[in-house]
Image (cartoon, helix red, strand yellow):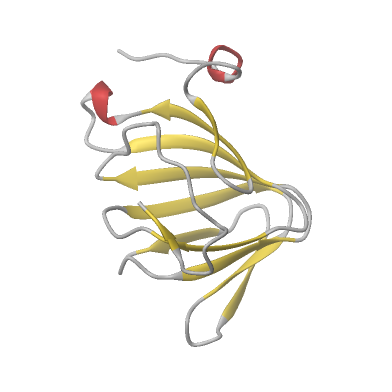
Length: 126
């Protein structure tokens, strides 16, 4: 059984500044579960152009407000109780109106060291 708390992850090697916020990686590839789980903070006022070429990702919003926009320009409001899943390795914009707190699930699992490069203008992928 694996039991971890937010408090023991905060400030550890599994507390990663991912680009426009923090990702507290609670479950990783090394745990052998076949998926990863992170507590993700997206900072208010940020825009991230993202793509997961090697992972599927699903996010469930716990708090805050923002939006996700696909490459066709369709926007979806993100607020508490909303889940979105990137089932086609979708390139997308993630915008945070206020600080967003998401539970993020990755399949296959991330290793834990991944960070986004948001300065290149291209979608940041891992």
